[in-house]
Structure formats: C-alpha cells, structure tokens
Length: 639
Picture 1 (cartoon, rainbow, N blue to C red):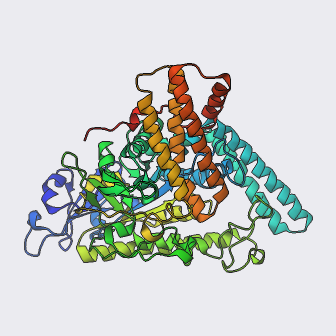
Picture 2 (cartoon, helix red, strand yellow; picture 1 turned 90 degrees about the vertical axis):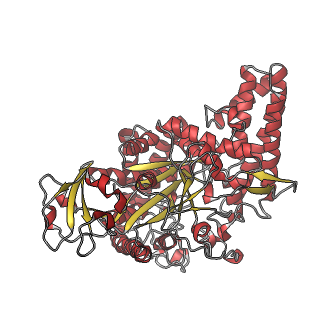
Picture 3 (cartoon, helix red, strand yellow; picture 1 turned 180 degrees about the vertical axis):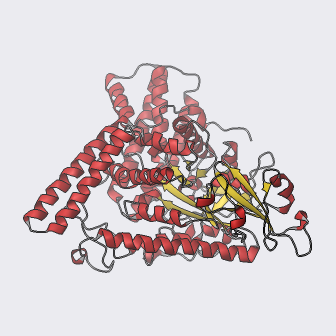
C-alpha cells in the first residue's frame, strides 16, 4: 500500500505511474497497478503552475473495487478522494500456561473456551475476507506461552473432547426446552449444537488441529501481521534483573521464529508496560538502586522495530486505564501534563547511538474507549448475548444483556437477529468515529494520520459473543479514505513523526503498575525477586559442571522461573477473578523452583535419587513449554 508521499519523492514515484488524460478542471492524474490493487496519484499543483516540486497536496488514493481491473478509466473519477489515514487493529492474544493445572472453573477450559469462541471465529472471518480478495490487515499478537499451548498435543486432543461435551450439553438443553414447550429455546440450543459441531469439523479437518499453522498461513499470505511478546507475559518494568528482561524477550523471539519461520518486526509489551532507562530499585525488598537500560534498548538488540503504548505515555493527560472499570473505588489521579503530541502520529524512542530508534504506536483514545468502556461501550448493548447467565453451572448461554443494571434472573431470551442488527449499527458508528478522528487530525496537521485500536482478542467472541462479526463489519466499511494497515507496512511508507522520550507506565488502572503491584500482590514479587537471584546463583555454582541430567534440571529451573514471572498471577489476585487459583499457581511454581535448585546441586556432583528423577520427569511433562530453552538467554549481551 501507499500513503501520502512527500513532494520531494514525486520524481521517484512517477516512474511507476503512467500518465492518463484528464479533464481540464481535474488534477493531473496517473495510475499505478501494484499487487493487483490499482491506485491513483493526484498532484494538486498550485494555481498557475505545474511544478510538481511545490505541490503540497500530493496524495495516493485507492480506487473503488469495481475499477481495479484491466482497462479501467481513471478519468471517470476526476475528484480525488483524500486519504485521511490508516487504522491499525491490534488483537492481543494471551492466556497463561494452564495445561496440567486444572480444568474448570480455572484451568484448561479457559483455553478451550477461547479457542472455540475467539480463535476459530477469527480464522473464519479471515477466510471470508480472503475469499473476497479483501485482506483484513489485522495485527495479531500471540504470546509465546499461548503458542506453546496451541501447538501442544495435549491441547489438540483435549479441545476435541471439550467441543464434543459442549455439543452434548446443547443437545440435552434442546431436549429440556422441547419438553417444557419452549420452541424458541430449543431453536437456540440447536444453534449451539451447530456452533460446536462446526468448530470441531473446522479444527480437526480444515486446520488439522493446528491453529498456529493456520495463523502462520495468513501471515505468509500478507493478510495479517503477527507480533512477538515476552515469553510468559512477564511484567517487564518490574522484573528485578536485566538478565530476566532479556530472557523474557529473547525466549519470545526464539519461540516466534520456531513457530512462524521468520523473525518478528514488532512486539506487544505485556500490559503495554514500559520503563525508560533510569536509576531503578526493586519496589519490594532491597532499596539499593542501579542504572537500568530502557526497554527500547533491549528490543533494539533483538532487532524489533516497534512496540505499543497507552495514549497517556505519548500525549499526557488522564490514562484511559483499560481495567479502570473493575476498580471504581480505587481510581487514581494519575493525570500528566499534556505533551502536545498526538496518538494519531507514530513516534520513535532512541535506543542508543549505535542502533536505530524503535517506533512507538500509541493507542487512540476515542476508538478504544468506545469498545472497552463498561458504561457506554458496544459490548454492553442490551441486544447482545449475556455472558454471566447460563442455564446451569458451566453451561450455555441463552439470554440477552437486556439491561446491565438488571439482575440475571430478569434477563430476557436472546434474539440473534436483533443482535446482528446492533452489530451493523455499531459498525456504522465506529467507522464514522474513525473517519472523524482522522479528519480532525488531517485538518489540524495537514497530514494523514493513524488510528491504533488495540484490544484483547478474548473480548471478541468470549466476553462479547458478537465481537468477531462486528470487527468484520467494520473492516468492510473502511474504504478509499481510511485503509486498514499493519505496523510494518506503515513504517515502510512513513517515518516516525518525531523522536521522543517516554515516561514509565502501562495501560492498567491509573496508568502505572498498581494492578500488578499492590498490598495484595507484594508477596508474589518477593518470590519473583528471590527466584531471580537464586537462578543466577545456580548458574554460577554449576559453571563447569555438565551432563544430561544437570542440563534437564537447569532447563526446568528456567521454565519454572519464567512461569513464576507471569503477570497473570498478580493480575488475577488483584481483580479477584481467580484469586485462589492465581495464588496457588505462584506458590506452586516457586516451590518447584526451590526443589529444582536443590536438585541442581546434586546433579552437578552425581546421579539423582529415583524419586527425584520421577518427580523431574513428571514436572517436565506438565510444564513442557519452550523445548528449545537456552540458558544463554540469561547472559548479558554487550551493547
């Protein structure tokens, strides 16, 4: 794709265009065909001159779809469509490692539900758009820990079992509705049967039980761009040692390359959490501080070109706080002075004198709040499927939201047609909102802008059942003036607007670290910091020792450290969504870490006892992620 080039680039660009006759009153125009898409270049010269070099209005626009054929006549469109800008939809896809750690209500069924309700519908949408020759151009972040689960034979078998169980539940519900004389309820239950039967067929037959390969094909075909992330979604600004930040990023990049066969261009920082280079000390325990590099320096060392932050890190003001609606009683006054910078421009952060700056994409506030907000966001519309009311514990959903202030037993039955009507209306509204945002930016700056709209993938289909259909409807409404684009494509067209320095922060409540570090989670960070120090000590103590058993012990020690560092445990404790489960997981990984550390000393000098060998094998089977784990990920690289 092309966006508005500068006039100084006109000579190079025109070599790829052929001149067409145009009406006297219309601008000069050229047409250019690239990758089966036809574009029109309009040079808006100043009155009385034909000098291209002084043209301030150089723009490239995409012609209507019906004209993208051989032999079209560009003069049928004498009026130039102004390119307002681009939209980057970012879907952040993540779950913690749950294989072997329970099933329901907390555990493997989180993964099963997300795969059935989010990942398969997303692939379905991509296939429909692909069949129409309309690339979605979505940006999809899939965390390394989730990639490892989706690729696991354990998931590939258990997911089929889950889909069969859900189909059977729907059949039982249908029979109960019919026995009660509720024909509408029976019809809704049969729809669920079709949903799960279709999901099973797609998963087993169409995708060969390999969802990772399905996403890889869409990236290879240019329909999506997939982001890297930190290995286990560790909360990078609070990790206690630079070696641990390095390891999270390096493990993430290595896992990406293993699954997608290429190196990543961009990364999703867990929770959009960023820390600049500065004097830093651990917020728990020792107050001794030291100089730490900014995260952009670590990203640049791994060849990563861009990352994402929340609006307030670029523009200042009040943080949007993705999770604010969960903590009404704890809203923080974290307002920062305005910076004059716009989230509708792309900026860059310097990564040291020997490396190029790393680009920063900031979340657009209006387009994000319209979806995220619990007060007026689309997912709260009364016509949509109610998430919380189910026919039985862990069962299926048959009711609409109706009014979010009503108790669950006052909800009325779900009407799919009414829900789809709201999907269309909300897609119309959102497309208009994006256009207006970009129109205002162009009016204020004279240049095309960008709207970055990041969301959790699990919002689309799981929390908001109609979400995938809404996203597809929005993509169909974007046209010549606003085009979807991936970050890498954008950076091929435009340089960052300015190089800036960023403050510390996240997209969490208050814009800082409170969701992950508070009085209820301090003990988790105490365990993390103890384990980080102990891991480096174990590596030092076993230097010079070797052997396959020691290698296995140290590799599993590293896995348990990465799992302990997962940001999910403090998050779930703070939100109370799965507090007991998260506390148990943090303690379990620390206890496994401590036992492995003792075994490392034994393995360095001799064989393990039979009971220890059996326990190690069981742990390797349960926490089997990152089979290519490399202890050198924890060694410092020279700047």
